[in-house]
Length: 181
Image 1 (spheres, rainbow, N blue to C red):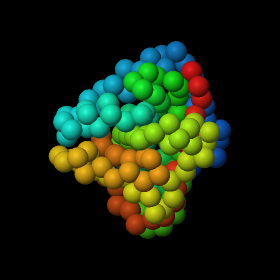
Image 2 (cartoon, rainbow, N blue to C red):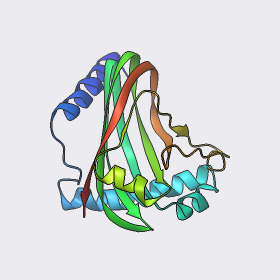
Image 3 (cartoon, rainbow, N blue to C red):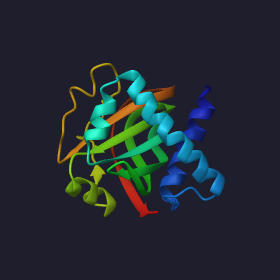
Image 4 (tube, rainbow, N blue to C red):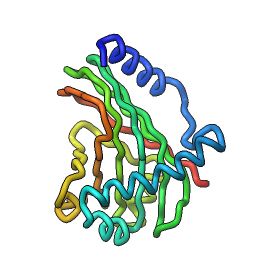
């Protein structure tokens, strides 16, 4: 990836953050793609660490974002669509936006899995009361990660990098929007 591509990725991510994006994909083809990609992303987490399977099934619910695009040159942003599940049943769609500032350059895509330990944690997510600040930490998916899951405020967050290259020492936060299906 060349430097101008990094700039385009950062500008594109910032534009997504500034423009109001829909939590649900705009087209039926986009919805179908998300519905195909979500179980694949869950299977990818399980392939990295088979104990994710029982962790997911024993959680009250989860949100899966199969492909979040992230780019930065000093200022960065990320955006992705996801699906939300309660007791194994899809109950809606969500989107995630992220803004960062600091020493950062590059671009990457990753999947994000947010597990909800109880109904209260899922409700906070659904009502938009959930934002992750710079001090929140997502655990990289790797062997043994699920067994060492740490619950904070009824949630545990994992990421699985799909591709790209990112160097980052920045601060920022993630915001989530939810729409019932």
